[in-house]
Each structure stands twice: as C-alpha cells, then as structure tokens.
Image (cartoon, rainbow, N blue to C red; front, side, top):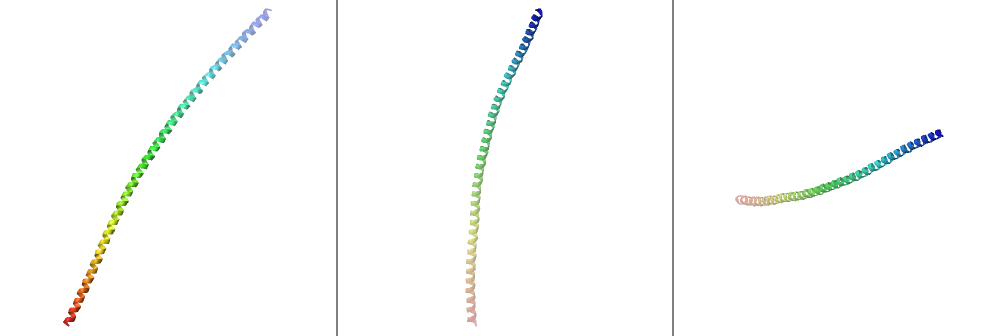
Length: 134
C-alpha cells in the first residue's frame, strides 16, 4: 500500500510539475503574444507617422512646384512683354529708316528732274544762240 501511495504521490508531483511548467510556458506565450501585439501597435503608429510626414513632404513639394510654376509664368510673361516692346521699337525704327530713305529718294528724283529741265533749257538756249549767230 505504501508503494501505491508513493507511486500516487510521485505521479501527483510529476503532474503538478508538468502542469506548472505548462502554465509557465502558457504565461510566457501570453507575454510573448502581448509583446508582439505591442510591437505591431507601435509599428502601425510609426507607419501612420511616416504617412503623415510623407503627406507633409508631398504637400510641401507640390507648393514649391506651384510657386516655381507661377514664378516661371510671370517671368515668361515679362519676357514676352519685353520682346513685344522691343519688336515694336524695331518696327518703328525700320519704318522711320524706310520713310527717311523714301523722302531722300523723292528729293533725289526731284533734283534730277530739275537738273534735266535746266539742262534742256540751257541746251535750247545754246541752240538758239547758235542759230542766231550763224
């Protein structure tokens, strides 16, 4: 009977040890699972923070691009205005040069016509003088 009792106590102690070790391993698993959950939560929070930062960087870049685009547009408009003014001044300059050349050409033609008339008159007068003296 003592042998049975000893066997029973041994089995009971071994089962207690197994139960305790299983409980200990279950507690460790629960702790590990809780730790993993906390890490996943921290990773998700970090991901949200990174997404917020990326959104802020994207908004900042879009603003900078829009500012550069508006600056380039205003500079291009100013350049186009300057080119229009310059082309207007050059057109006016060419028109005035052409007008001046036209006036000079008319004066040259008028002088040539006057010289031709004068030469004709002088030649007629010379012919008259020759005919009278002969």
